[in-house]
Amino acid sequence: MINLRIFCALLALSSLISCDDKAARPSTQVQQSVTASNTQALQGIEELKRRLVNNPGDFNTLSALADMYFESGQYIDAFNIYDRALAVNPECADCYNDRGLSLFYLGDATSALESFDKAIALQPTFVHAWLSKGFVLISEGRYQEAVAPLNKVKELDTTGVLALQADKFLARVAEQGIQ
Image (cartoon, rainbow, N blue to C red; front, side, top):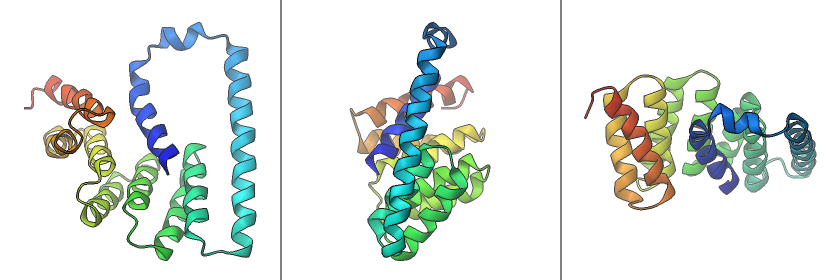
């Protein structure tokens, strides 16, 4: 699930890349990279699905498959597989976090926030869930509510990448005139 964490961090940071930077890359190079990435993702998904045929309750395979679906933008499939993984291991805070991100990208912020809260209840020091909660609250325009989870990220990850991302989100909150 580390790949999903990296993906989410990059996704959040991608707003820092200007359109000019993206336009500077030749479109054929971008297209080749996307095509190769999609082919690789599809092959990985098919391999994991084959593994599940023999062992449908394998938590690690379910979790990896859900992550691959998420990374390829197949959020409905990711959500469904995270639910299957959670049926096997209902104590997986990371699955609840990733499930919540899937729900958010499917347009259900309320359920996403509930999923992050379950992750936090299971593992109160799980920084990713706190950051995800703050991200979704900001995305929903609920700036004042986002302050506490983002400050929790900074408390738990004082100088890391997630703390830096929390600072960027808090700057967005400050732009709204909320302290």
